Length: 132
Image 1: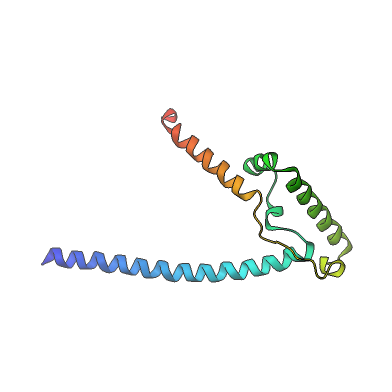
Image 2: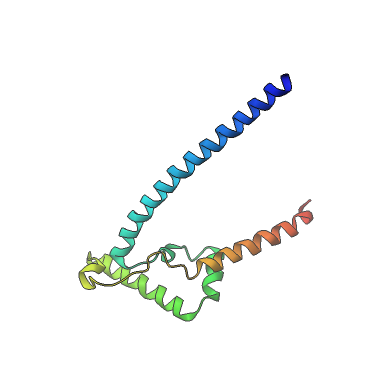
């Protein structure tokens, strides 16, 4: 009988945890979508992409940019210069190019960054025995 009570309590805990996780995932998904919309509006004002906000001094980003195609680097540089110019003039990209289609969340270098991070994690795990 006591085993049954303990088993039921642990099942109830698991169910409560799963329900909480489902609610949390829905709330975070909604909040993430709202944040993405707000961020997209801000990026479109200056004609930037989300990847343009990545800090170039981070090791993974620096390596991914070094491996990137020259067209990707030229596009990134031009978008950043245009954004600086628009900000200085206190104008929006929509003032100059109202019908311009922007790919705000296009991923060109982020897959490389993920591969570099995975490689570094694997390297750290393989060499974890050397630290002991």
